[in-house]
Length: 379
Image (tube, rainbow, N blue to C red; front, side, top):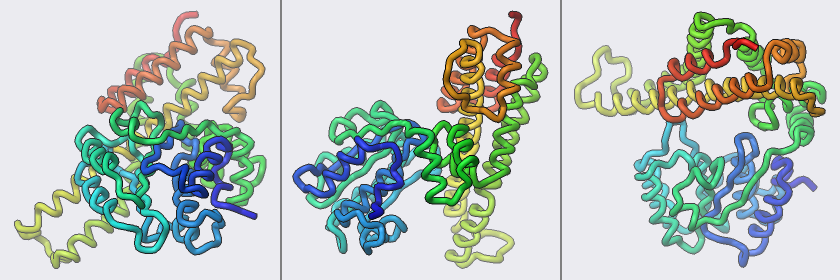
């Protein structure tokens, strides 16, 4: 029999803990912290747990589970920010919601998929709700690691750690769930380094595979400082274009819907009394576009790290599979033209750029510094 846990691949120890809690109320607690590296399936695990809490049979065809999986259950709320941080005005309504008893299901479940984006203010607002939990409310917080969450919150939550799933398990999921060709699924799973969401996108979208190939070719394209600056500009412009493409249509629809609700649709000039609400929407859309651009750039940097990892594997003669098997010739060319020490230096440059990007450094400056660090050095 299929269960809601089937899509939580390669996480057997975590699933055992969560399943036991869903089936036995004595093993439940009011707040859970699901942690794991990107692509480990934190959100999938939280969704499956929320479904099992409403129906311990965990049968995806049952009404309770089906509603949760479809995102329509009245007692299950999912929060995933599209901004850089989760603001306090987003958390306060959740705190109020948490005080209500479930209207239909066994539990009121609130899932915050990006708990690492809580800042100090919003985290303290949430802390008050976790310190004094209602009897039938459960908080499910997802983050890359416990250290990414305020210490006061993680000390009051039960932690469940997820791991990077095996490549073959991710490939099997793509074949079973999405009908992907097994060879394509395996290549995508390797390229995504077992990140389920990225693997699915690479397997289904030829343009995504082409963009990834362009990023990997940057390593061979950079021969000096001038090349590095030009490559950085290209990468940032591509990230901006991708972010705009992902948000432009939604932004326009949100603006139209707001103007319609305010009775200002079709007006050439917005009345002064309504400009504040329009400005607030534009600021939120700007934050969403900023995060989208940073996410695209960060993914490109992860791809570059995978390339230099492969270069280092070849240089050291390690007997492990390459992440980028389709680029094996380029990998071996880079390995011949550099040393392991230089490969490590390049990986450090990419990692430092990721840290700078997370610290709100200008994307162009962070990427330029990274590209300069990737240029060939004397052997």
